[in-house]
Image (cartoon, rainbow, N blue to C red; front, side, top):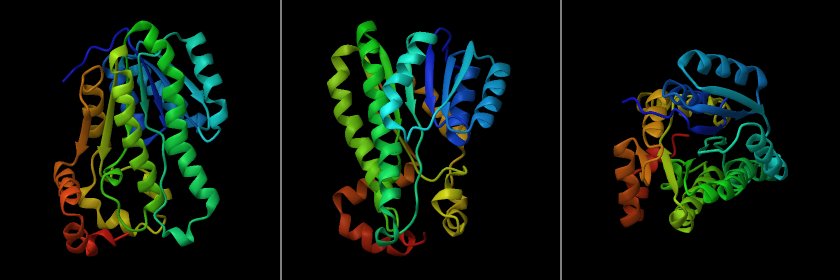
Length: 264
């Protein structure tokens, strides 16, 4: 379904590849002006070129490492000065590592929280003042089904996504009277390069390959939700059902799902 985003400026983090790249393309197809944030300058340039051919009103890239959390307010200030008001923020950047806690270095734990949680919060905090002034805006946070149902060897990643969901649920109520919308997207495994870092053995990606989501399909559903009151997007539906069952019968689900949960 085509959505008219002409005149809207959408900022997307983690936009140099994977789901972020697909989100940028979908926004471009719908006529939006797009701001891309990512670490890889060459990949960002390729996405900029692609979005330009797809019909984006304007595309700008800002190479930036979101691990540098303290510099985020200055980045947003620069973007707003150069581009203008940000109508929607899609917090997509993030990474994971499938490893047991006792094998996970403290620097990795900090880095994951910095990028997955603190940067997301700081970006949201930075765009809210201008959204409040205009009485409109939308923040979409890409969380995960891991934020609803934790599994072994993902304790840190699951913790970051639980944090994103909790933050989003609270923020939604905080800014509701200011005309600002907040949506969480909770996908299961997506067929992207995410697993190259999360599981360099390739075993987990291979074991869930038949269940992996198409990044273009996830991007389409996310962009369709822009500027609507959609509270959550949960994909795939069967995984969402399991997470709901876990909330009611955690012991049963963990016992029955033990073999599958330990596939990482």
